[in-house]
Amino acid sequence: MIYQLADILGTVAFAISGVLVAIDKRLDLFGVLIIAFVTAIGGGTLRDLLIGNTPVTWIQDLTYVIVIPITVALAILFSKQLKFLRRSLFLFDTIGIGLYTMVGIEKGLEANLAPVICIALGTMTASFGGVLRDILCNEIPVVFRREIYATACIAGGGLYFLLTVLNTPEKIAYAIGVLAVIAIRICAVKMNIRLPNIYRNAK
Amino acid sequence: MIYQLADILGTVAFAISGVLVAIDKRLDLFGVLIIAFVTAIGGGTLRDLLIGNTPVTWIQDLTYVIVIPITVALAILFSKQLKFLRRSLFLFDTIGIGLYTMVGIEKGLEANLAPVICIALGTMTASFGGVLRDILCNEIPVVFRREIYATACIAGGGLYFLLTVLNTPEKIAYAIGVLAVIAIRICAVKMNIRLPNIYRNAK
Amino acid sequence: MIYQLADILGTVAFAISGVLVAIDKRLDLFGVLIIAFVTAIGGGTLRDLLIGNTPVTWIQDLTYVIVIPITVALAILFSKQLKFLRRSLFLFDTIGIGLYTMVGIEKGLEANLAPVICIALGTMTASFGGVLRDILCNEIPVVFRREIYATACIAGGGLYFLLTVLNTPEKIAYAIGVLAVIAIRICAVKMNIRLPNIYRNAK
Image (cartoon, rainbow over all chains, first blue to last red; front, side):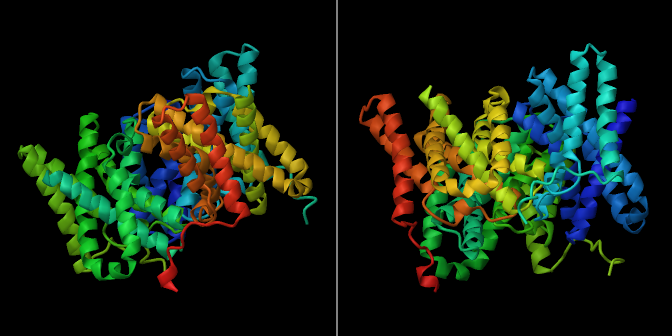
């Protein structure tokens, strides 16, 4: 129940981030809807395709097909007000990547895949929707350029596996994994922490 | 028989639209071939992947692998004359999206999917090849920016399901679905109808 | 054994080509890693998805998940020295496409697909990683614009099937196929051979 509510909050946040980018590119109504949809379900879809989990999730579970168009309609109607929600949106989005990371890891575990692959699937679930959004909008994906984002997913996923190796009960490890992703991302943004600069000696 | 002829006409029209964009970008012969191919089969391929219908259609049915290269060769040889065919091309393309929409819906029904998902699959079959064409040519997909295109597919697909709910015989509903997509697109272009502008209060 | 070494060399070369493009775009560490990964495994992944061979190869065989990050780390550390390795890199890359072409063809044969489809899968395995790399970096794929590259894969693949029709022992045909791709690419680059210009009468 709490889990499903959080999943919906994450979907809403991802869809809104798609709407914002699409409006910025002045796409038409259909374009905005598709970008919102792709941002919200793109990561999970790629994950499902790679592990052979078809039909993919959003085709089987109609929640997304209901939640995303409603979100888009509201986001367009209240687009002026959206900028005042920036802080809430960041929080939703961050909760979203925390949850999506662990959802991806669970799907990998169900398919008996190695921990490193599970972490990759979790990170993909959380971040690939944004990558697709940026490609469709003809931008280099922002996740490749700025901020601790995917890195938070990798770190949270790694922590989860470390905890399970240490015999932490599954549910607790899961919750800590989600919270770790959220905490790392919030700290990184608040404290302006970035990945090590690989262009030092470039200049 | 008529169905297959129409499928080939649609494929030819989609392939030519790919050739035109690729030549515009001055791609080489291989690039033009791939763009034509992706434009013609991209939508159906994505649909097949999402519902787990693999190997995807064009790998199993060699029609496309024969028709598309021949189309590309002729389109390059007669590229000067192509501009005089603009009206025929628009008609082929419009017939193509009408048929592709219903093909996608049928595939969804065969997989026992919900009507809304079937309509999404139909729209994807008809429009995603053009999206891939534009991404590969480094453009924001034209379908996100202009004209009633995908919207015609959604409307025609919706009409089909409405008719089946009203107990219309399957073949008649199918034909009306195809014709509705074609009619909506032609009317929209002739009468310059567009999606509601979501940027009114933006300025 | 020789085969596996060559596969690793090809993966390393593809990963380095990804690193070079990603650094050129000044992506961050995560971006560089993903571009390297996608360049190295993108072609095989698309092939696996299209024929329904899931979970895809790199999810089942951890070699790639080990080799690619190590390659990226070394490529970043020694990025200044990389330019002196240009000739070796070209050789690795060319060996890579030769091998990847035949790997793709074998996977098609295992799935009982037609020769023309197998050649398409082989060419895709060899060249689609580079296509994805360029799309993610917001460039029109270089393989669509320049040089004999994919064309070498198609020619080598065609030669392989010609030889098997002529009852050449499988292993010999395989080796000749790989060598043909390599030889055609090297000759084309050395002798500056290109695809026929389709823009003659364009001016």
